[in-house]
Image (cartoon, rainbow, N blue to C red; front, top):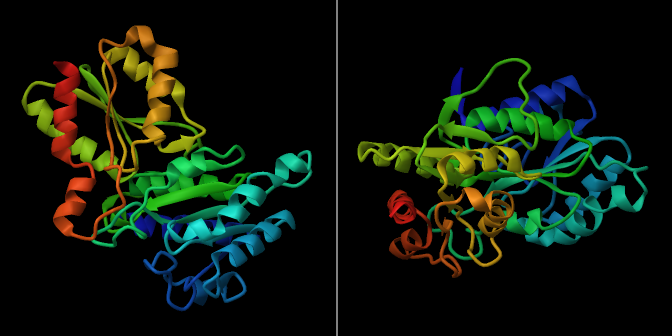
Length: 323
């Protein structure tokens, strides 16, 4: 069926809550308001307030409560109204969720999913427009997923809910209304498996989340000039499917990495390091990164547009690596 990214997330959680009574949703306004972005529409009516839990505005509190529930055998889904607010829960995420399984010698699993919108929308300014996936990827013990399409969102969210480890699941806010295929019935995608979204021979473009859509648009424009770009979506940022990425790079010999986050110590730097380590001899030139500007996000729309990668910057970067 064709549906929105929002509907894909709704389906994934609804199917898992029907399948497994241990799964519950907790967060601010997830119940009667149906979520800040209406991802949990209809949940409280079907599952009741004991499994769709509205909380006070206390990210550290309800994230810690969910971690305790996971330790006790439940499978919580924590919805953050935005990952910018997740900063308030970083102690719980980094020092508890990510470490308890290790510190208990494997005796305690932490099957928790922490999900919600990330990156910039339109004119939400510096405190509400941050791409923080590199922070979470830095922490051993966390899995980090950033799907770009409804199909991937559903399949990866179901896999995340079933995983015995803590999973950070980042949904770009502007993706919620986008449409695509949503497989019906039992549908999962393995965590840690990248996908080639477009086959090409001249250059590899690595992009994830909403940057993937821009990369595909850029590839369409480049094709009109006879440049065939291969677009690879990591989908899972940690663990990273290095094998698929290296296979593409070995074929094309040229790489452009696109990310919305800041350039310094960004995820693109890690991707570049992996390529230089495992496929240096296959490269025909330096890797080029397209990133967000190294500044707090401006509120002004024209300045915001300058701070976020766009299709034309990707096209320019591709032509640069080919020159």
